[in-house]
Amino acid sequence: MILNRKGARLLGALLLPFFAHCGSTCAQSLAAPAIAYEHRTVLIASEGQVDGAQLIDMGPGKMGWVQSWKGTSGSIRWRAAVERTGEYDLSTILESSGAGCSLTVTLDGHPQHADCGASGWRRVELGAVHLKKGEHSLEVSSAGSAPLSKFFSLEFVRPQVAARLAARGKKQAADTQWMIDAKYGVMFHWTSQSMPREGPALQYCDAVRSFDVERFADMVSKMGAGFVVFTTSHADFYFPGPNAMIDSILPGRTCSRDLVGDLADALGKRHIRLELYLNPGHDDAPWWQRTHFNEDKQEYFRQWRAIVRSIGNQYGKRLAGWWFDDAAFTYYPFNPDWEQMSAAARAGNPQRVIAYNSWILPRLNDFYDVYGGENAFWESQYEDLDYLPVGGTGRYNGDWGHFKKDEPIRAPRLPADEIIHRMQDAISRKEVPLLDVEVYQDGTTSPETLRLFQQIRQAIQPAVSDAQ
Image (cartoon, rainbow, N blue to C red; front, side, top):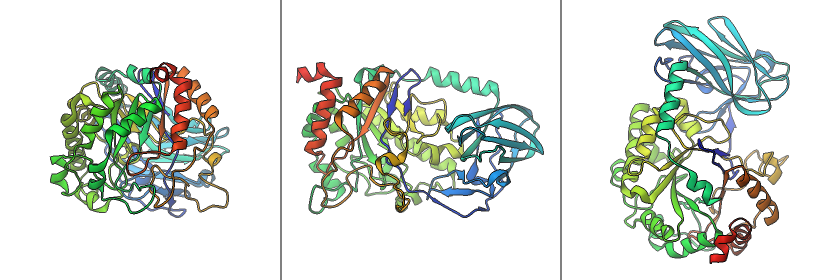
């Protein structure tokens, strides 16, 4: 679910990655980032010493959470240095197990307690703490009759700093009324791994070169969507157009045809806006090695800003928004300068909307317009659509795009009347549904999918339907 600062929400698709975990004790370094006086500081669970619980390993470039607490014996411990003496508000991001769930945060031997709240992921406030300059010990433990479900992070911020960050974020926020007016959007994971209906796939830049943007834009128009989120990089880091900054990092990852620009123009003629989806590329080993992520986080984020700034300047107002994937697990744990990141993302268009994907976690920072996640609005439990079947492999079924060879696009999982009802309910709350749609390598979808969207359009966008 995606919450816009000005009232809009988007609902993303629920197709989630495979999570592995280490054993019951995960020995990590106790050292933690310094608790800053002028910024918010995150202490991430997976960088503490974990005892009596399981640390989720999400793979390269990601920080996971701690789960499977063994009653009150489990704990996470850090040592952290405080830059300057002051009063700091303390909060945590966790998943509550519901009634009877509580936690204890112990600072230098002095415990602070808090109820976890209702079931689900949330930010729990523990109140103000006085911290002197210098090194401190911290420990988190599950304290209630019901074990803590999952624990992700501690946050420290002085109240004055929190107010200042919120004011700065509000000042630079983009107007998102156009998203509310659009009613709903569609997302396409069209990547270097996309497959045709049958036969061998084209090389990525050959597929970029042959992509029929007019046919694609006509298809989106028939769907009734007011905007498109188009994937530029996903598992592999490629960009469907020219970009000198990306070429300077790793040659061979861009294409001579400017598909992004052509898409923006073709969609724009039909009054449909274009946003771009950007994944960090941590599953692409050659690319990831060139990002400096593992050895120098400051250089990593400098390079990140340079890439998105160059793309933003390249397309200007033709690019309406960004969807930054894996923000909760690749960016948030390392205390980036979110304000600088968002400023780079708005290069060329100060009204460009920004979403940092939170997965199903709470909002991550003050400097974005759209709260974007992956919690599909019709699914109360992941098991509802057999994503995690009982007795299965433990891996989520399904995929973000059409990545299987010689297979047709799957039939819609839910009937049109149920999807329409849920979408109408969301829209009545000024939520903006965003539906992830499978497409073949040539940019087309299945007849069944198109018929479904035409029913959705007729129910939700009758004026658009009548005009076509």
